[in-house]
Image (cartoon, rainbow, N blue to C red; front, side):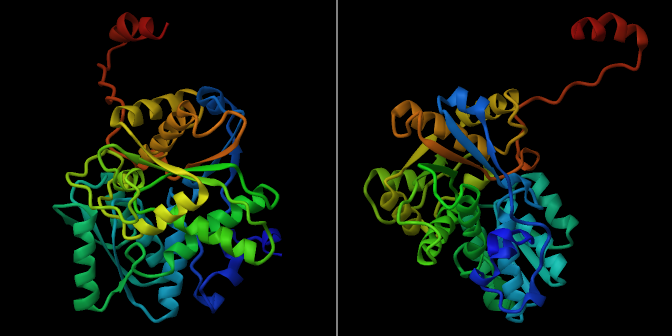
Length: 362
């Protein structure tokens, strides 16, 4: 049975698109912990809160899942050059998996994408193009690479395989909970393939008889500076109009027009969930709070999800006795800008240490 196998997300191989296991590129993705979080739950007012630690994937975010499957399948189909637009983490994941598979990769990022993500792409040997604009503009350039250079386009939902990797989050969640699902899932949303993938995973598990028809309420969290899914949800719209002037420090949430908008909205509504936007100030303050209660150094996207969960509890949309899963989608060291000022250097002078530094510590 898949749940008893090793091999990360690839233990679900029969439910994944790669036909020949010889093409699998595996760096350790999947099998991320589902961690009880009592201190965070206490702060949020929840008795049964658990965190799915996607930040522990090989490239530091849940994007490793989608790229592992997409790159493996693309190479199986004969692709030798892969291209994708990215706000940050997807680009690093593409670069890492393309390098492991021995194929070329081109990553197109907004010029103000986090520096850590840019370095990650270059360190893996991929070609990096920085474009003055947003992720949607980068997507148009990726399409040009596809058409003119014959590259395999791995843009979100422009091919079917990244979402196949993301659905394994749903498989794992059900298995880790003993083949049942929680009351609610809270997920930070940019392109939204995590939500879409999990929903697909739940449907497949039901078809196999592993779970029943019950589903968790799905909650999407966005930043107030870029909240097209929230606006469409609140207005009862099936499609989300592009967000003008998208702005947020959480690079993964700065997606003004999600290709799978209607799929995300369908998941939210069918599940009885909702979409909520949080202020930029709350994202930054929540990340500091999370670190202070032992949650670790989280990404701004994860902090946004936690801030959204707090608002959902306060509004009564999520109740204190419900079982809730919060997704930690990325590691904090990959986020910019930092929420703290860098400490200033001090003189290399023992007298100064004794007079100024030690008293501050004491």
